[in-house]
Image 1 (cartoon, rainbow, N blue to C red):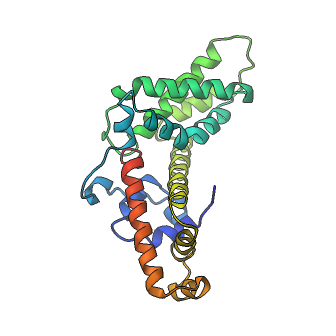
Image 2 (tube, rainbow, N blue to C red):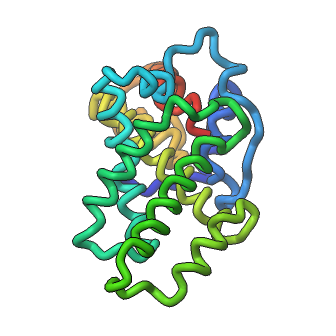
Image 3 (cartoon, rainbow, N blue to C red):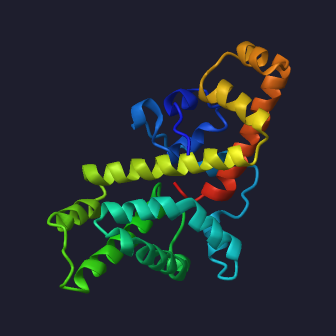
Amino acid sequence: MYIFRLNLWCSHLPLKLRPLLKLFSLCSKNVLITQFKLKTILDSTPQSLLDRLRDTKNSQAQADLVDIYSDWIRGKLHFLGIPAQEVDDLFQDSIRIILENIGQFQSRQHVGAFRGWLKGILLNRVRYYWRESQQRNVPENIDQIIKQLSDPYSALSQQWDNEHNRHILQRLLHKLQQQSSPESWQIFEELVVRGTPAAQVATVRGVTISTVWMTKSRMYRKLRELGKVLMDEFS
């Protein structure tokens, strides 16, 4: 997974894509949060991942959920003190709970609704884990951590939210790279992510400036489509 100069990259986003920043909370030293709604810039809205997950027979949607959130959930289970040998079981259990209850989740409630709902599931599962056996060595500060995370306005909750958004952004860019040719990705990365002047990118890559700009436009369209399909509700 790549770590990008995200603040520079965000400053180069065209206006049509800047509503995506409400999902990221990463620009300007990771603290700027814009409140634009992604749906206001879409000509049409395809099924989001949450919509597709409500179809219990949609195995691809379930695979997409695991692909997007596997590393995130496992990392948070580690953070919440779950022993390494138990993480896989709790991860699978958490995914099961999410899929069983996704129909009850009311989307479009407010910015961060799904993120908060997911956090609640993980915290409840961890609480149950530590309570179900008195033989486990419970971390001394786990109750305090869970209490802080249960408060959406605590510093720890804010950190959790920012890390979630950073993870989603990185997954989005990773998928963009996977779906692009090496040449297109290199041009996009140098021009948009690193802020290299178009003329320099054209010279280094041995292409015309018009090719550089057309590649940028094409990659933005792909990024926008990924945001629509994968992240319409993941704010």
